[in-house]
Image 1 (cartoon, one colour):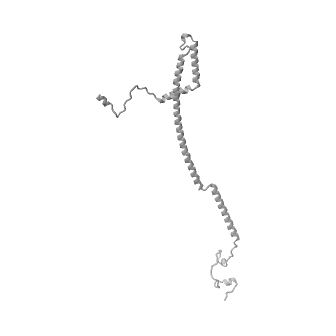
Image 2 (cartoon, rainbow, N blue to C red; image 1 turned 180 degrees about the horizontal axis):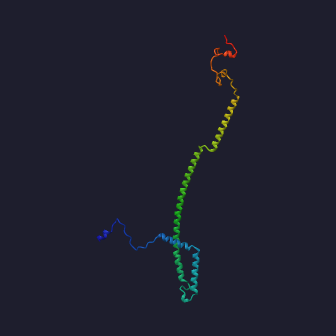
Image 3 (cartoon, helix red, strand yellow; image 1 turned 30 degrees about the vertical axis):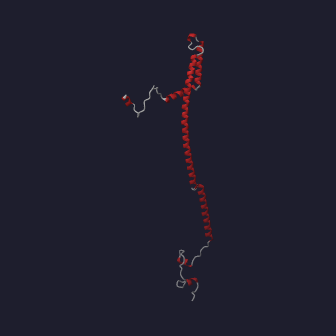
Length: 208
């Protein structure tokens, strides 16, 4: 009794009692059930089953009595078809449940991707708006062309005004000192007197 109390510990889970059923891989069983459901949902299965039932009826009707294994009323065939229907329904439901799980996972993945695409689209929209605002303050090609054309017109107008002003300005007369100094140098700014012969060169006498 003491040994039994020592083995029963409250800090450890109790081992399950009863018959232990064999374990199987749910994924493998699910794939197998889906394969059966897909096979039963094809035209080939209907054709093959119709051929088998027709042969069953023909053999158990036309064959000798001692060779008939399922005579009229076909009780064994009814049992086989009932077992087939009883197993086919759960297998089809299992395949549908697996397909529903896959659809749910695919839907969640699509929702996640849609959320990411929406976030990316909003980010790109903000970036495009920022670029448009920034480009609004940058000189475009047309603006530069218009400004260069305007500057060229102003320079042409200024050159024409300068040319007209030069044509209207009269030629400046040659000074008296230019011939003496030579080389086109301007005359010296000095008073006129008779020391250097200014009056004799002009043909006038100095005033007394």
